[in-house]
Structures are given as structure tokens and as C-alpha cells.
Length: 266
Image (cartoon, rainbow, N blue to C red; front, side):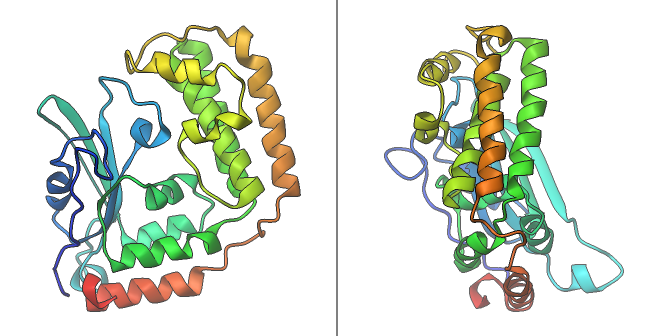
């Protein structure tokens, strides 16, 4: 297999990574296998990072044929957490075949990672995957966002922290927008027109601390959360998105070509 790695995009300054550390491409390239892509996920992608937020890097690596076809199987998932210059970095990558399987299973996480505009490393295969993303979308992706919202709302009720409250609103609004338009938008700031008017203030409040207390209680926002949950269910039922993904054959072909020919041969 061609082991050439994708060219990293520079971070920092006014580039595509904004104010994130300029060494993130170097961190991603330290993974032991070639990368199809690495992007920034988490609070930075969602539009409400705090001053002390860690950096979540997510991506896809490619196992060589000998670590797939033989008795010794390579890792389907690689993860590493470390600290550099006072910034905690959480890096997780899936092998290309595993990632494509997740794309076909109404998994909103992997779609958001694939389509994140905060690109640390890329390749031609990354572009192919992104082009196939619309054919992976179904109305059943609403279940992902509804389930995640329920989990985060319960966490907010127990902890009173602002972070799970913002996550609750973020996933509900991402789901509503997806069902209406077929477009994956993970940045809560871009989704404010769908939400209650105080969301911008909550985003601003989160800048102070990753695990700070919410300035409002559950009783003050429960009605808005319930209304958005009901709206997402209605949008799901009325959505023009299909029942099933149609990208399986194309994804299979991409995995085979990339596995056998390397990233530059895909």
C-alpha cells in the first residue's frame, strides 16, 4: 500500500482552523497509519468552546491489506489523549471500512466529523467521502439526534451545567435543520433562528468555563426543549429524506480502491 500521508492544512491565524493551535496537523499526522482525514469536532465545531475546552480531533485511518486479510487484524479504532502546551487533545480515528459502516447506520456523529469545516488533514478519498454524504442521509437520522438530546437533557437536570444544556439545544436544532433541508449543520450559532432567543446569551456564558453552571434552571427551559423535541419529530415525519441510504455500493468501491491503491491511488 502507498503509505503517503495526506497533506495537512495549516492551523492558526486566520486560516481554516481559526484560533486553534497551529500544531494540530502535526498531532494528527502522528497516528501510525495514513489518514483519509482529520477534523476538529466537539465544542469547537458546535460553536461554543470555552477558554479551557479540550480539542477533539476525529478522523479516518487506512489499514494496509495485510492487516485486514490475514490472521493479525489491525485496529479498527485508535484513540489517544495527551496534553500539549496546556491544551488537552483527544484524537480518535476509525479504519475506513468501519467508518463507512457507521455512515450507513444513521450515525450523526460521523457525518458531522466528515463534513466539519475545521479540517486538519485531508486527501482525495476525503473529498469522495464528503461527496457521498448526501446519499447516506435518511429520515432515521432524527432518531440519533432525539436520543442524544434526551441523554444530554437528563445530564443537565442532574448536574445543572451549561454544557449539556447547550448540547441538548444543539442536537435538536441540527436534527430539525437536517430533516428540513438535507444539510448537516453542527454549529449552533448558525442554527439560532430555529431556537429560543436566549441561546446566544447561553453560548456567550459558556466561554468562561467548560463545566460552569447554567444561568437558568431546567424549569425555565423545559418548555422550549419539549417544543423543539416535538418539532423534530414532526420534521422527521414530513421530511423528504429517504428511508434508506443509497451509498453502500459506492462506499464499498471506495474502501477497496483506497485499501489496495493507497490514498493517492483512490
